[in-house]
Length: 199
Image 1 (cartoon, one colour):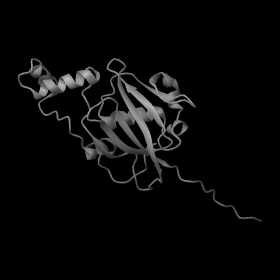
Image 2 (tube, helix red, strand yellow):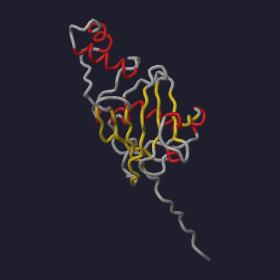
Image 3 (cartoon, one colour):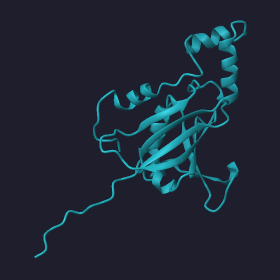
Image 4 (tube, helix red, strand yellow):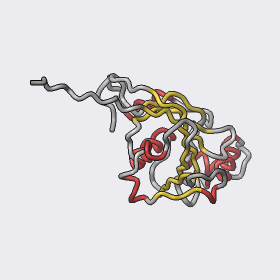
C-alpha cells in the first residue's frame, strides 16, 4: 500500500511593483512588493497608503486592450464590482505589464503601476513591503497636477497672494521632497516583527 504523500505546491510569488504619479515633475513614485494574489480592491488600499492619499474619493483601474498599445483611449476600465474578484496576477503576468490607477476623478490623479519583477516570497516577510520612493504625496483636493504646482509656488513664496491660506491649510512643514520608507512600512505593520504576510 502506498504511503500518503504530502501535496507540495509552489509558493505564491511576490510582485515587485512601481507606482508613478503621471505628469508629476520631478516624478513622484514608490517601489513596493505585494503578494501576487492580492485583489484590485486590496491593491487600491495599498496604493493609497504607499502614496499617502486619504482615500476620500472614488477610484478606478484601466488596463490596455489585448493586442493593442499606446494611448489612453485604448485602455479598458475595470468595473468596481469586479475589483473584489480580480487579482493582480490576472492582469500583470510578466515584467513591464502595467495598469493605470486613477484616484479622485475630479482632480484626476493618474498612476501607472508597472510590474518590475517577480520574486520568491520570503517566509519571514510581512507584505506589502515598501522598498523605496521619491517625493511627497500632494495634498488631497489640491486641484490635480496644475493645482499642486500652484500650491507649491504659494507655500514657497511668502509674498504669494495665496501663501497664508495654503500654509494654514496644509501646515508649515510640508516638504515636496520628503518620503519616509520606514514610516510607510510602519503604517502597514505597526512596527511589529515578522508574522503572517497580508493577504
